[in-house]
Length: 481
Ligand code: ADP
Ligand code: MG
Image (tube, rainbow, N blue to C red; front, side, top):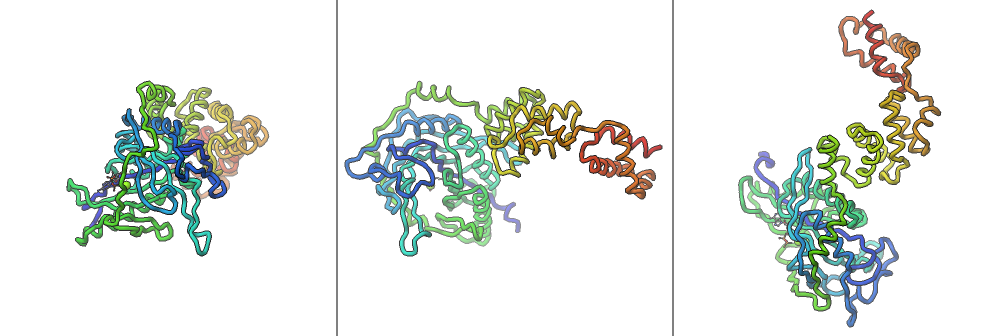
């Protein structure tokens, strides 16, 4: 029985994003990552009696920015609630969150899966504070507590149960990460725990309207683990349904060593959080003017830029999406294209050889020693026939990046000018043909596809410098003599 045909997965994601504020949500404690334990902890973070929290304006602004980018509607009247539970890394005995009314309601995020665009529908985005960290693997006898993170500002972005595959889920989280970086809302660094994801997953028979019983896999800290956890759960729950086993609502955790999930607790043991409005924190009102001012200060969104690249620059959906994957890449594209005025060619260069260099070097475009004007110069040299695309992309580009020298200097220094001189080309062609006389006979007997082999050999002999168009012409002429 093929379970994929019979069952459908339904997924809702909750993403916690640490806001890039300098201080915590309700006090001036710093939020630096990797500082010595418990050095960013004042009496307010610890909720000592008599201390009074105050709301961080910047955190409110960043939450509104994210909400506007996701087309959410922003709440006018806001207040915080206490979510009461006991945990050693929660010094107050409660977490301050927005329970009844989130700062942002509804919304959508546009994602692309297998070349097709789709919208993920948001339920809400709300503000809350983070807990501290329990550390179980440093001391043999005791668990240690680091409260540096306690009280840092988070937004929690909650989707409707509208996602159906692990690919969609991964595309959504990737898009949210791009958005928070684009808007300077967060660095979105999953390795540092600044973007964490909980996946709610259920499976039902196809055609059924009612949602199945869900499990929640907590704290997925990479896109890879998110994909694996979802795929594992879909197949686990599908086979349970196939065997008529009852699925129970559970909180589960992902084990990255075995690529499986295991149960942490059943829903019956769920806490009663006894929510109530926090009496120490002033409610706040967001005026239309306040929201409008933020809206005006927003940069062009990736989806807007993507549409503009398609409409004004004639890029394909795929290319425009690739270019807007990252704000700095998009900026770089625009800067190069201002000089070159050939969007398709610039997009091909950036999505191809330039991103290859970024991958090989494991760095981002701002860390790469490549100025927009150098890339533009290189593209123009190829367009003018001074250097072959193959030498330009595989030899000149990395050398420009390594040295910081302009392309034309590199081309001269390494003798990489494209060779169009007929005598020189014929010399390489003769060497190539003499190397494989049988192939030449086969070609002459009608195996015309072999021309590619000869061209390839000339390319190799000339170290990529031979003008491929001329090589083709001369080869055909010689072989058909
Ligand atoms: P909880 O009270 O358990 O936190 P919520 O209703 O707040 O549940 O939903 C939390 C997340 O789980 C949301 O993203 C929501 O879309 C998703 N969700 C709710 N029910 C299901 C279900 N049956 N299957 C998959 N996802 C679900
Ligand atoms: Mg939940």
